[in-house]
Amino acid sequence: MSDTSTRSRQPSVRRVPLVAPLRLARPSDMWFKPATSVVVATAVPNLVLYSLDRLDLVMYTMAGSLCALYGHNLPYARRARTVVGVVLGMIAGLAVSLVTASLTGSTAVLIAVGALLAAGQKLLCDATRVGPPGPVIFTFVSSAALFAPQRLGQVPAHLALTLAAGAVSWLVTVAPALARREGPERRATARALNAAAAYAEAPGHRTRRAAVLAVHAAWQTLLAAGRPTPVRRALERLVVHAETGLFDGDRTADRGAADAARLRDWARRTRARGPVPTPEPAPRTAQELFGLDAERAARAGSPRALLRRLAPGSPLLPVAARTLIGCALAGYICSAVGVGRPYWAIVTAASLYQANLTLSWNRTLQRTLGNLIGVLVFAAVLPLTRLDPLVLIAFCLFFSFAAEALITRNYWLGSIAVTPMALLVLEYAGSHPAGELIGDRVLDTVIGAAVGFLAAALVTNRRAGGRVEQALAATERARAHAVRTLAEPTAGPAALDAARRRLTGSLVELREADDTASGEWWQRALPGEAVLAAERAGHRTLAATANRHGSTAPAQENGAM
Image 1 (cartoon, rainbow, N blue to C red):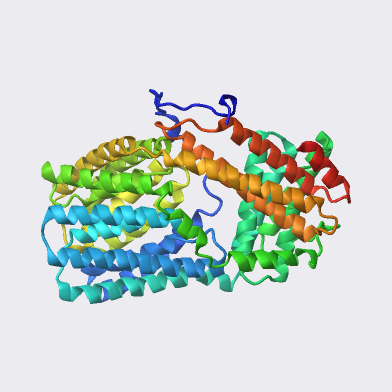
Image 2: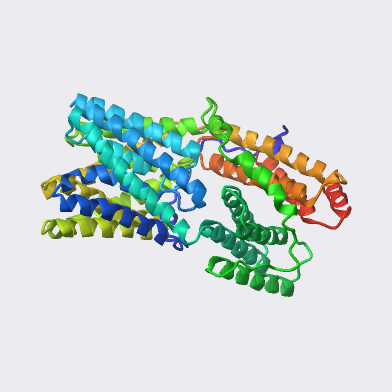
């Protein structure tokens, strides 16, 4: 590779952002779904335990209730399987913690086990791409359980409580399928239509990239949805409309405004409860879309991608190493300065580790600010929660809802609600001195954030550059396959669609890999020009596959190579 085809990112002193990570974003269009789900999933076991006068057991049911936070972006068939996996993973981590706590009182051993669990949970959540809220919920539960008094004979009953609450969470997360079976697919399609409308109205790199990502996400959702239905077939046609418009080079300003208005109208009607729009003429017939079925079957349940992400050369391993070292050091330092149960330092450190060092720095600022303000909120509401157990339950439910309502605006804003909720859970087992709780949490937050980020800076992730090279090779293969498909006279729309989806996925992976590697402060030279060239060539090929007018597509592609 020539010198002109790489851009160097050698170790250097960077200006770290201080304000940008704290800016508020627009709330998610579905923030209320995880918020209401976790409230219902928490309220049911809490009220049952209240009626039995056993609120001291809430920590174990809370572990299962928090599973209701997962899977809300997934179609219901995939969501049902994912939440089952989340519940089983939660029980496995909790079992290790409870057994360890029952066998030893050594703080050093407990911290070591907590750090190992945090690293393993980080690695598995990243490899399986379980989605938000990621591994931090698992780490919070398992770390807190390590420092809870426990006898070995109690462990089965406590795990049974977690399983029962997890079953409630599963029912809560999949119950909406009874009323609207294709709800997640409709939302994903509506996002793709709105993003395509934004590009039609204001063509540019930013809007096109956002539209490509939204269309790709819509295809992933539809392919994961399971058995095709008439509604899903109609949604597939709408996504094809959105996708084809991204490569229309002849669109005028007036036509772009008209296309944007039409796409937004389809998005509004798709998101609503009425019938899915059926635009005419449809760019694909139902028979031509049957090619999706083969892709759907090929992608379902394949363990190959997971094994590749866990392979020895995986770029996820250095991030897991950061988690292990950072959590262990944070816990040991907090213990050395006198914190008796330093699990919050472990959780704080574990929450920092994102895809690269830049994002980890952003999360460090957000977590520290949110936790410190959250401790003040906890201090303000603590006297009220001690008036009556029902008041305590009400505040925990309120903060659970508020956390999910705010966290999509910015992580620090959500942390303001997460912190008092997590601290109030301790109150179910009995009152603790307020000054001790507040002092320990402030100390844990500061030490956990400082030590955790220091570990992230010291443990480099040079494998991220290797992931870029792998993504480049995959993109070239996908593009070559698309070119061969274009050149095949007998290739039908289904084959062209499949080739385009494969190439789009490769381009998304390439951009993600390059962004991740670019965010590492200590990194070898990256093939920046090669990435840009591959993206330009890939998008030209995508434009050629979108052209459905006979032999002109191969001719255009050959001219673009």
